[in-house]
Image 1: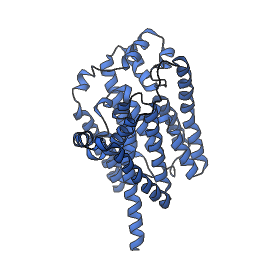
Image 2: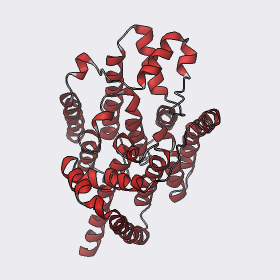
Image 3: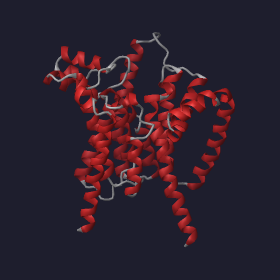
Image 4: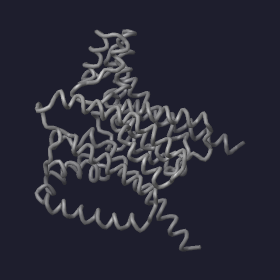
Length: 352
């Protein structure tokens, strides 16, 4: 009984702490709202002039993928008369709040104890990976839905019943329809099944395919309409450099210092820098292969999936960073959590 009470105290305490950290980072937004809401205004204006069903299935043609959560927030604002400046803040806060709850309450094969849960929460709430442009805006809640789906991949199902499986799979579909990053997580769900073949993992993968297929069809449809207007899939060397900086360097060294060092000094040696990281990746690939740890493999798969997506999907070279690199950089940081667990287990075996 005391153990259960301690667990509840831990959950409530850090739920309050991390919720307060979200509030304290931008307290004025909760009263005055966001006054620069970018593309969200298109969702809000469309919802205000169309019926409920059309507003629910609206697709922003420039994005070319479905954003259910953004549509819901726009519908809520137009039907109940709330300002879009405030709606975008509170809907964005809600998904962050749910993310905190899930991490604290769930049993995870990656976040195996409280310490790792708190470390991961710090990654998704207060780390430099979470750029200001994605902070408390419904439009960029897709990054936090993506992080929620990412951590769901590592759910421990040993204590799941039919009811929990139902809500878990509904969440997979809802997340995928709300975030393009969640929908491409179907690849990681497949690898979870590939490395751990059982009925539950296979069904989870099938559910994750549903939003991916929908977004793929939407992308094909709008790409045909816009054919020849713009070329989104463009290869540039600067994209690689921006990707390296935003997903590998900035999450570890922070924003200001790493940006100064990278763009003032290291950028002059970009080819040498690229070769250096290629060698590092090669040695790390050998390490991963020898470890044969399926959780490490899923983390690497998630990282490569997200970095490939933002690399080929970004329109300009400097678009490969910032808000587009949020999930990739957090996934990269979570790699160190698993490495600590793997190496700790290795040293414990040696000393036995």
